[in-house]
Image (spheres, rainbow, N blue to C red):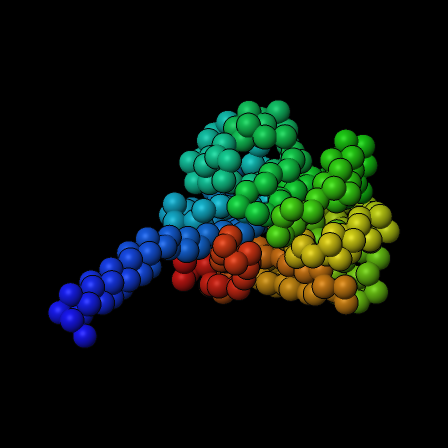
Length: 280
């Protein structure tokens, strides 16, 4: 082999490995997203909320999902709303708030601070969110809210996940496995009261459409917030593969838990776990 041929071979090898290294270094690093679901932070006195929840720094989370009952009467006055807003940044597009019965005193005040209606949809990083108002029409999806929800369920296809955020555990009613557990899981008992799990059309009208969405290849999660007094975590997967989740706290309880989600938009994975509030 001539010296010139040897020189060319070495040069090509150097260029090959240099290009490979540059290509490897240029690959973008996967950005994981973190979402926190927190609910039922109320005490029995406005404008106070759970002291641990109030002291948290939520800037490390890409989204904050609030399951309702943030203060005793969250929207009763501007002082309580201002304090709540200072903790949760209610007007941020990254804060999703599913209203509970303790939040419902003045919906005009809620909308002023949040800049959002009581129910709405949002698409972000491959996930479609539907924030529901389960106080409206005593948990039954009717009118404009039903039209909005069905519009999503009938057309969604490009997302990797569908997440329904709501306060009441409406999927427990009329489910032969879950309904007997209402009194040991939900803060509100089964009945006709404003804070109760009321008879509703989730399993008769909504759930069949969620199964259709699941069959199109999307993961479907329903995440509720009205627990904390009787249990601090709940998870159930239906035979069709739809997930029912709930988290909520009891102010002052040393064993409070929240739901922490980790999302990889590149691989389209969404994982979750219950963690102690004190460990955040």
